[in-house]
View 1: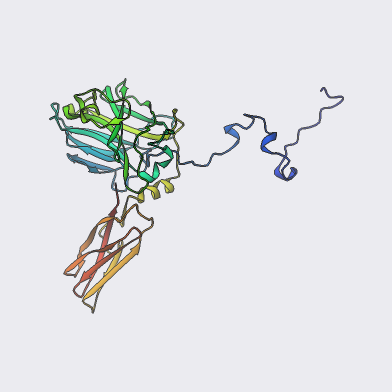
View 2: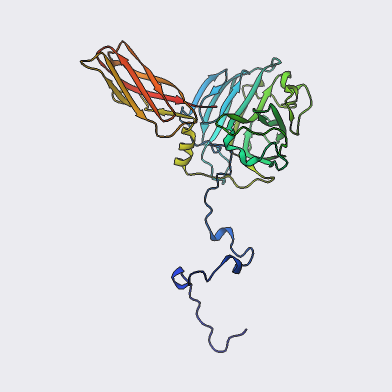
Length: 366
């Protein structure tokens, strides 16, 4: 209605001006509250850990890589026997997307003629108990959507595979890098699998495998684009050989794997939350071998010494570990990791003396 006289001045309401329950869900019109009016709490919808490549506890660069292992960025397993590589954490990222780091692979020794069984794959391995919401193996199995930003000097076809480690099933999707040395966003959707449930435990159930090259063992069949029992020849058909030239490199960041048939914006987590999630699988305590870098085993006037600490994060499983001591400040005839649990580590030493502990590394990777 029109106003008679002067229009009243608008006065913003505060929560103190509202009676309890005066605004209810039923009274709010659909779509009346937009995303700009509220802050969404993290939903942990991303099944990938460290998809923004921000955590690199092991170090930011490793060169002369010719075999498989965890190298730099946490949770990312470089599975290869094809070519020689440097893996590094970089600040080259897509502009305006919120990312600060990327993972880079740089070919330093080429192999243009792979043997049949050669492979070149960047992987992340996921626990079964993290995947139960997918309802895999039931008629209600959920689809998954993978999204990521990628840049490479080598254009062509690449393969992104989901491998079910519990039931030896897999599905592969191809994507194309269209322009050399240009950040591009890729989105791939995988239908739900009604066959074979994921085991509900802390073991390996699902592997995201980003194929960058492979021999005929993996490429000689027909690309399997629907869930099926594994046939190796159908896993990476059509993939480029990123190892065919020392000019080749590959960057990736913003990797997200989520339930549904569409990709949402990348879910950024606070740095400390991301770090704690990574430490469930690997952590390095201490940084150098300087005096008292991490701790001291002191058995002076005794023939035996013991030192221990509680880990800052409960690990996925009982870890393996390595110990580094300061040899110039050690008088023990024997010093070793004596006990490892998901929550603690202990060091034993024999012969009357003391020793400074530089670093303790513990790993419960899948």
